[in-house]
Length: 393
Image 1 (cartoon, rainbow, N blue to C red):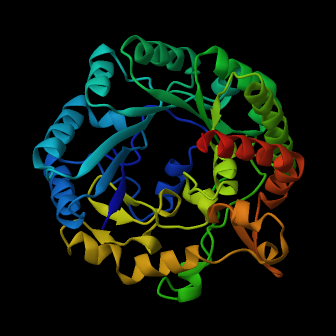
Image 2 (cartoon, rainbow, N blue to C red; image 1 turned 135 degrees about the vertical axis):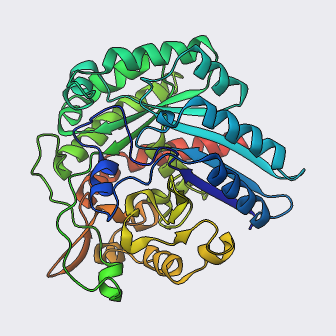
Image 3 (tube, rainbow, N blue to C red; image 1 turned 180 degrees about the vertical axis):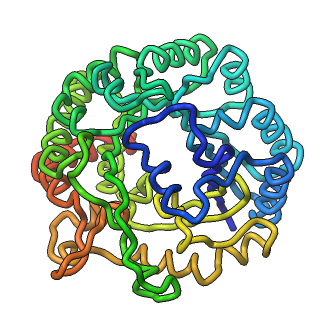
C-alpha cells in the first residue's frame, strides 16, 4: 500500500470529561463491550510491525490519536509509541503524528513532547464560553472553557502546531459571528466545524449476518436533545460563517475553515481532505485499545468489526469481507444526488448523516449543504480561480 492512515484509540472510550453530546461514548454503549481498555505497549508494537510490513517502500503512514480522551493513556505510552515508530520505521517510509484532545490533561511536559515529536494537535473547543460550558463538562458537572484556553496558551508557549475543532450544537449555530470571532481572537488560524450528532437509536433487530442490516445507516434519534442541530439551523450557520470567512479572504486576513477549503479544492480538481467531502469511505482504519479494527470512527460498532491485530496480516484484514462491504457501501449515494447540481461538490456528505424512510436513503443535512452552496458557490468559484492564477505564476 502506498499510504496508510490509522485513527488510534489508545484509551478507547475512556475520558475525564462528560460532554453531553459525546458521539463515541454513545457509540461505545451500543457495542457488546463499551470500552476496549488502555492500549498496551505490546499492542502498539504489533500495530507498528503490521503497518510497516504492509506499507510500500516509499509509502506514507499517518498515526492519528483520538478517544475518548487519548491523553488518558498517559505520556509514557505516547513516548513509547513515538520512539518505537521511529526505531522500527523503514528508511524511506514517511510518518506523521496527530492527536485530537480536550486539552485538560496537558502540562508543560506533554507540550514539550508534542513539539519534539512534531504532533499536529486538534483542540476541542466549542466556539465561545457559554456554548462550550453548556455541554463540555467535567465529571463534576463543571464547564471546561478556562482549562481549554489554558491548554491553547500552553501549546502556543511550546510552539506546538494546533487547530480548533468546534462541534456545532444548536447553541453554537445561533451565534456564527461570535463563534468565528472568538476563535480568531484566541489565535486559531485553522478551524474545523462538525455537526453535533444525536444519539443512536435502537437497532432494528435484524440478523447481523443479513446484508441489509450490515449496510443500513446508523439510526439517530434526531432533534430530541437540547444540543440537537436542525438542518435549517446548520444551513444558516454555514451561510453566515462563509460570509465572515470570505470577507477575511478578501481583506487578506485568511483563516482556514476546512469544509469551505475542501469545496474550493474540489472545484480546482484537487482531492478533498476528509472522507465526508470526497465521497469515499474507508480512508483510514480505527484501531481500538485492544487492537480491534473498524473501518470508520462513526461505525466502530460490532457489526462493522473488521478483525483484530494479530488475527491475520493487516493487508488481509483490510481486504476482508466486512471491509469490502463497507467500501462498496461508501460508493453509494442518496437518491437526491442523481439530479443535484452540487453532487460533484458535496458528494452526498458523510454516511453517518444518512437516514432511510419509505422513499429511500437521504442525507439529514442535505438542505443545509444545498443552502450553503446556493449562497456561496459563485464566491467559491472566485476563490478557486484566484488560486488557479496563483498556481500559474
